[in-house]
Amino acid sequence: MIQNLKTVAVALLTLLPASVTVAQENLTSNTAGAGTAVGLTATALVEYANDRGIANIQLKDGQTGTNYTQALAEGKIDIANGPFILPFLLSRGAGPYASLGKEKGAELGANIRLLYPYTLSIFSMYAYDAKGIKGWSDLKGKKVLNGPPRGAATTNSRALIQLFGGLKVDADYESVTVNWNQAASAVIDGTADVAVIPVAFPGPRVTQAGAAGAMTMYSLPKDTFESEAAGKLLNKPGSVAYAIPADDVRAGLGDGWSVMTEDDMFRGMAVTGGDMVNKSMDEELAYQLTKAHIENLDSHKKLAPFMASLNFGVLDPKVAGLCGPNPVKFHPGAVRAWEEAGYNVADCAKP
Image (cartoon, rainbow, N blue to C red; front, side):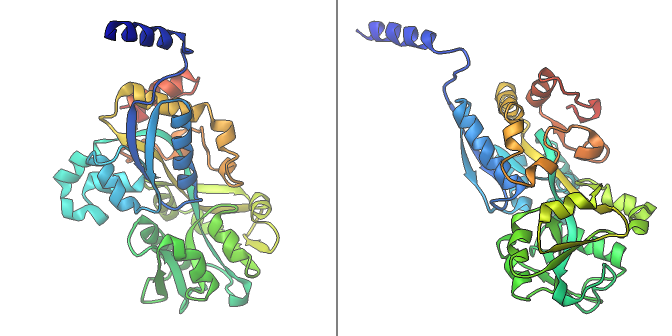
């Protein structure tokens, strides 16, 4: 009887289409705020993997990137997305990972592999017109929202203000730090006079704040943007210099917004990153997850109005922030998926 049942089961499996697989993998994934590029991409991967029978992914959003990047490297979770600056700092045993030491940090950093890169957001400055702020050098004595209490975003915000505004935290302005889910409220209720944080055109935080009054988005000053010092800051691991037509930004932000720039271009610092896995992930599984993302690129870019401008499907190291000091390389399975789809993967980004 048992042998007969086995025969029937095998016969039924042979009737299934070749493209259908049984979801045998149970994976865990962490991401940051819901509604952001990373949040939408993480949620989409759950759907892609489930629809194709690749894996069941248990996703936790609203998590802290500093923490889950280390958890990914330690093999405690399977997938995570966020900025490349975090694996860079981890690999150096620096910043929030200084307590690990350089040797342990390097060991853990080497465990992270990339499935696909994209632009997470663009650092910029915005404020209500009623605040009377004229530009980056006009923040002295102001309450400035720099980001969350702990993380790379706040460090980047303060560095941008120092370089482009000539002002130092605490000495020249009051730093405001809140969790991401409180960021829009901090601007709306006046906890902060101005925000210098990652944005999208339009993104959920700027849309929420803009609904409460006329606002202005400020481009980075052109002369400083083109300086050697800015080149080092803007193109460090986890970021690249970003410039697009100002009219595109105006169109994205919509009514009620002004864009301040010296010419017809808008300049900012793009935060680069992607969806990453532990290097121990099975090659075929990494291939299937990446392939699912690639084959959904067109619909993926339509998940939100800002997603089309975030360079999904662009592997150029200068746009994606790959190679150079960035220690993150593609997973071998991801390389296979991208090259099979006709994309060029730079040798410097291969494991």
